Image (tube, rainbow, N blue to C red):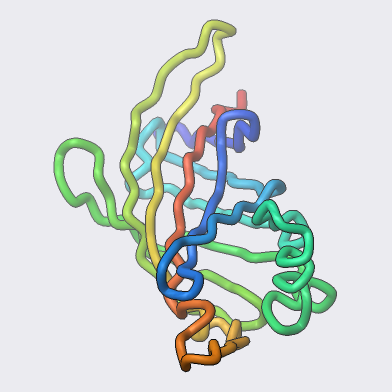
Length: 178
């Protein structure tokens, strides 16, 4: 079997998160700088070696003050921990339409935990320029406090300002490296 290597197509990929604010709405954020690499046997992604890294300093919630707070020691502590990393450890085929459960080690700050992500494999195609590309939609959720993101505040009425659960979403397009 031929080993194929894949790299991120950053112009057709995005990594986002959502977290409840005041428990009534979601705030959406993203990481503008990240990388993904994969190694597969031919085009079989079910046993792929996948690595993801996000530059925490590239976090964006469309609010400069909030982004600064997220970069501070209250949350990500970007000075000490500039990257978020994920390394896949196992994939399980959920059904024949290309849905998988992807397990791996997620590291935020200095804490590594095993997480499960739902992956929808969009397929492999050649683009108009002759590049072979693969597409994925990824969803998951984590408890931020499991990773040392423990900052919390309470409203005057005793309500929670920021939820513990963080929803993760990504659209990833990879390019086969020739």
